[in-house]
Length: 247
Ligand code: MN
Image (cartoon, rainbow, N blue to C red; front, side, top):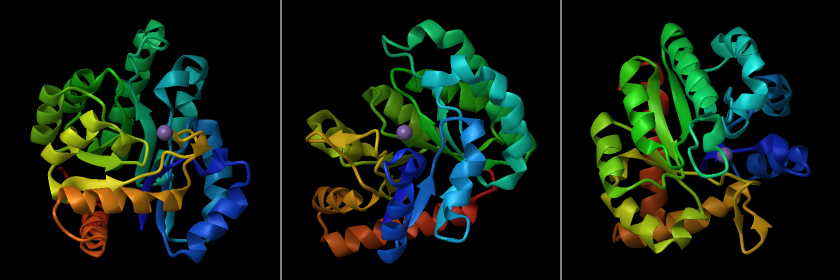
């Protein structure tokens, strides 16, 4: 199983979560919300090659942590993965739109200068802006839009640009999201938890809850869970192998 967007450092017991991931033989992209969290989060799983740690600056806190961009630059060559990054223009966060845009542009420029990264991107109420900005940095790497919630036309633009998508248990509970998933190319889909932030029925999603997503994808794709899991695994192998090449 693949969890391509988890906040391992935020779980109540990160070490136990890491042990369970290893016990289950999962592959996980451990994203961070601030550059200053990178080292500590990386050290949680550094001995396990199946868990990769991404360097991030979450758009919802970019205005508080903009001074950490220099730290972002310091660590960029330590990893092939960047996230969580992006823009959030939803009602509670659009006040800090300008500083988010500044941080996102800086990050994409740095990714481009360091040869391209796999990027896990938050695009709430800002998918069109995300795609327009990505186009300004064509060598920044491979964008994976996590928990996509934009419009159909934004989805088509994202697909056209070559974006990948990661889908979690919270997302498959929405009828609208399921309709969107049907339009996404099957060979550019990964699973994610977005735990512990993402919750289902009042409980934080765990990395292994991606199993539910695999089952739903299987029925959308008219195949069994085993086959859907294989598809996701092949997608994962592919994106990892593309790593630093142009999309
Ligand atoms: Mn997240």
